[in-house]
Image (cartoon, rainbow, N blue to C red; front, side):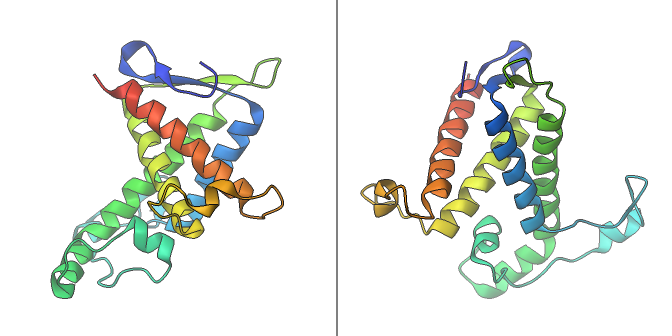
Length: 188
């Protein structure tokens, strides 16, 4: 099971992670949370004003940050249609992405590493869905920052070890393998 998700009982997924992998995944999920930004104000875990959420309107323009624009793309070609769609959907989409990333952090924090420093992460079906969403968001963000294209002969895949982008490319490829194994595990 090392490095790749496998089917767990109850329809979930499991993966063995070492201390370094746990640390990298947690750090990336926290950075994603910071990128997405804070949610609504809460008091004791509950919304400060539950009715305010019913009337809240989101932004009408795409984010300026290219990575955020990739996470929250325009839904329509027409600017007016996209603005209207974004206004009513982006708050909920941001909240879901935040909830998913927070679930990843919490599941990693709940791990109890063994004597070798590694641990087996077991996810129920809902947690697996949250992980899948966060892995996808991390890859979209990293791919945008790295300016990844669909060209498989991209120079990014042949960077020398001295290139400062190399660790990010390696993490991007590793997350892709994790994501692919999780998708395959969850497919019927």
